[in-house]
Amino acid sequence: LEDTFGNGDVTISLSVGAQTASEAARSFDFEDRTVMLNSGYEMPIMGLGTYSLDHDTCVNSVKTLLQNGGRLIDTAYMYGNEDAVGEGVRQAMEEYGISREEIFVITKIYPSQFDDPEAAIDMALEKLDIGYIDMMLLHHPGNGDVEAYKTMERYVEEGKIRSLGLSNWYVEELTEFLPQITITPALVQNEIHPYYQEQEVVPFIQTT
Image (cartoon, rainbow, N blue to C red; front, side, top):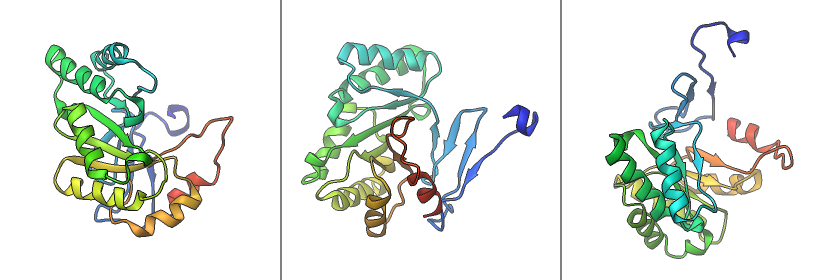
């Protein structure tokens, strides 16, 4: 980036179309390694995924990440370690003097929970036990996903969740889903890598 743009500050903004009051501009800060979400909160652009980590490994991994300057942790109901993530966060806050506001925790509810989203969200809040959830995602599309998302929107209004998003949503699913909700997702977390290239979804999101 320095070779291309020089030594000045570099900011990249991605327009995601006409959205809410903040115009949904996402500004990347490469010095702080954060991105400003359309919800008005900053999210670190790198962090720790906790899939398949058992309880003790998860607690220690979260603490090590936070001790060494990392601030983003990603978990989910289906990972079975939300309680361990919360424990690691609480211990790190106490032992290393890190404030809650510095830490960004993402969790997800699964389609099997969509029939009672309030119970799913309350359980996540209880297991994490860190005051609020920085971002909650729907883990996959499924029956009742719109109503589950609308329930998450209500928890945003109550201050229990700060940002909302989707996981494993692609062009077809987004086309059907987005017109039915009020709060534009701040994040779409998808599987994309050299062996699985969903080349249409990124430009679709940027222009929707």
